[in-house]
Amino acid sequence: MHRSIEDHFSEYRRNGYTIFQNFMPPDRLQHIRQTVDAEFRRRHTQHPDRIRASIANVLADEQLGPFFKKHLLNPTLLDYAEHVMGPFVQLDGYEITGYPSRTPNQRKKVDRWHRDAFNYSGVWGRHGNSHHLEDRVYTAPTACNCITYLQDMNEETGHLRILVDSHLDYAFILDEDAGNPQTNEKLVELKAGDMVYTHNEILHAGSINTSGEIRYFISAYFQRFGLPHRDTFRHPLIEAIKDEARAKNDRRVLRLFGEDDELEKRERAIWAKMIAEDRAALKEE
Ligand SMILES: O=C(O)CCC(=O)C(=O)O
Image (cartoon, rainbow, N blue to C red; front, top):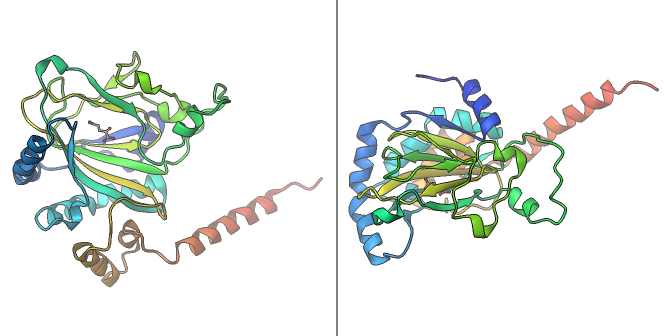
């Protein structure tokens, strides 16, 4: 079922995440799995103790680049990202991650509660005066994770767990409890090809994979324009995407890769308009 941007956003604002079902077609996800499987098996064998392996900066990968470009520049995704963050969306990191399967006695174990990069709650939760919180104010995220799963997510592959609406209450989990299930956690229902779009203040955790197969997800991590980013955009394959965008004057694609000399000036013009409106609205004494 097709859902409108507004419908996704009202769920996102309330819960801290929303799900785009069937975001990646089955033939594409099978193709990606087959392309990366041997490399992930090699990496997992080389480092058996590591919880996961990732191929980062995937747009710069000769073989994977074209598929990942299509996935990232999908207008449904970019329209939604702009709706959530405004016209300030930059790519921080784009990767495919694979979790090796573990022994059945690890089934249902939590893989570390956390918030994603550029969140404020981590600093607030550790602050001495953080015991009081009067307001539950929604603020636009400084970063968002768009995670597309390449298999059904269940007890065997390891559920994604979320503390629903924790982007509003700054709930905090101490490091020593990060591996424990939470009484109010939600095990998110997800099928292969579904994409979860999260707010970076939401507390979440993966679960250990015991399915016998590698568990994969693709993560496109967006952040506020101008923040330091993990991926490098100075690669010939990414320069080629920027050249195409320049030819079309596609500002939002250029912004994704950290390029927009006019943004600050345009944003300040909007501030000036709002300040002027507020001054004009002031009632005389
Ligand atoms: O393993 C998962 O399903 C979630 C991964 C995750 O939370 C993350 O990479 O930040």
